[in-house]
Image 1 (cartoon, one colour):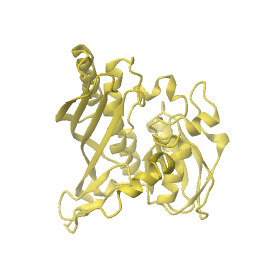
Image 2 (image 1 turned 90 degrees about the horizontal axis):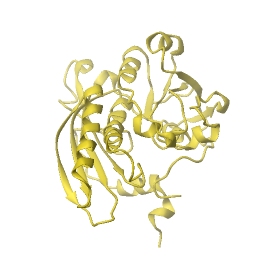
Image 3 (image 1 turned 135 degrees about the horizontal axis):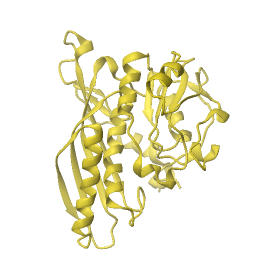
Image 4 (image 1 turned 120 degrees about the vertical axis):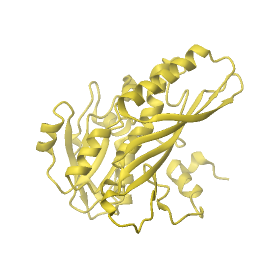
Length: 300
């Protein structure tokens, strides 16, 4: 009998999403960074001014996404920033969030207060509010779980998905890659203003955030766009103390990966001089481009 470890994360998600009930208001369902819901009738006039609703849920688990000994404030920041990063990946901004925490009774009140202080720090800097949530107990010894679900907003004219990439598009990535284990995965900045600027000024055909590593996420984007890709390995922007294999496989970079036919590098340098933007390849007609690795929750 097959297990979820045998098939891996992507195949599991595909299996779970088979035959799901849908709705005329569901514009984009499972398989992208967020679900997209029509805030108003999709046939309404003045589409460029219409705001669409982004829906996202994400969880961090002790022992998987953070060490049990990690500072609670940093865990709180990460738990919120992950969701905000997904809103950014579709060109959107954060709205209202719901927080679910599952804790063993021995977890200290001070730890939980610091957890929420980290959440609030992230929201104050990047937008959004906590509107409610849920608490649940766990057996002693079980790992702490923090789940964030919420709503974002995006102008219909600035919505970007993973599936819009075109043959010949340049592939770009913000920031640097690799070395998340050194602490970057707890302190990263969701690229909300950068995504808004890109979608406002350029033709961004496809975009996602890098959570499972470039080796896992680039093939996902290309596959959704029904394209292949040519990756320039020597052009990858490396974090300190990181190698090319680490840039490909470490994961939890939370940088924007996007494709565009436009020349963006020079305007970017003027707008965001402190944040690198690198062209790392092109989308191609060949769909079975080879690249393996990255993080999979169930195939180790």
